[in-house]
Image (cartoon, rainbow, N blue to C red; front, side, top):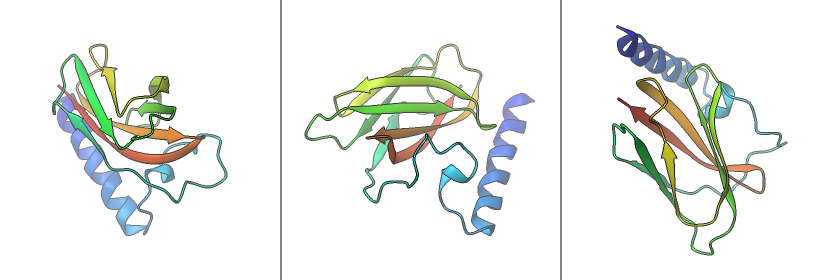
Length: 121
């Protein structure tokens, strides 16, 4: 029953977000101590989906610059933080997370440059 409730909560939050005209997940989550979200955005992807033990987040990072990755549950609690990611992918341990949807944010110079969803089963 809990995964179904989580799914409907997630869909409801997305619907309300679209109705309000706010297409940035930062409406529901803290702003990572920055004044403005970066104008530069990267595409990113997660595999496998759904993830069971680990999820791999891949993103654009050709110059191997330092990034951070934050993972939040749907009520805004930070459940993971990867402080120094230099490659174009990161391995996130989801084995200790409950089944459901999680949002991740990729930060560079304390600005969010990408975001997405991780589905955990």
